Image (cartoon, rainbow, N blue to C red; front, side, top):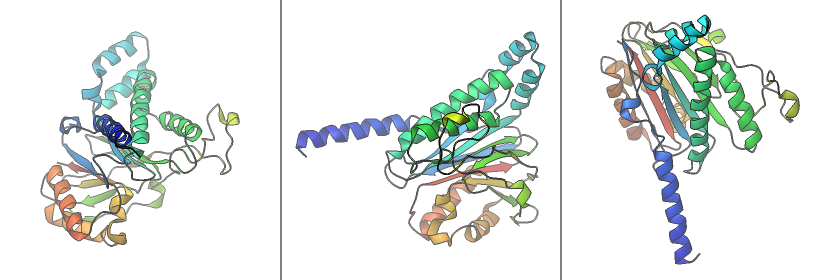
Length: 298
């Protein structure tokens, strides 16, 4: 490769990284809910960005819900208006993990970022809330546009001011709930831990365009929503990618994280996040992108 070609490639990669950086959540994007403290971040294995990604959906901050409620009521759409009112007391968090952890995998994460937010806008206007239809459409679109070796593990959850957490899991590790009173991670029953394959591996069974898709692996059943009402005062919810759960050849999580959270449970979500990030680096060098979101009930 000539010097000019190498310089041109370096500029292209820098430009790509700058574009991907613009999609990283800013501190001000962290959802603000009464009685709920949220903080999170992503540690790429290489470069400034990688295949892990977080999308925060602070409904009150990102959308004019009051205007949408007025419009829905004027059209007689009471169900839509009621859904929008519920969104005023909720915030959404999406944690994505694109297969691979190279800088170029951030391109697929960026595509999912924009598609998700565009779909969320449509869902709010039509249904008053984000439904599983959005993820069925994302799954079908990604299946058609990417190879079998590229897929996205995703967890999307909504936390309410009353401590309820509703979420959909597609190939992501299940969240962990640390009980302040019990001083440990809680066990959640299997029927409240329903999951689906990562997005893009199998086309959806229940979409109208099913007949236009061919799949050597069959079709995916409908996404299901889990609902946990476990967040009492001081309880801590951890959302994360497999970079954390498999850190240190599976020797770090959950045991060491549980012990650490026990020590820092009285701190803020940001301080708990910082403590875990610092400790995992002390334990061993990362072998993958690592994403962690801490949700604490005040």
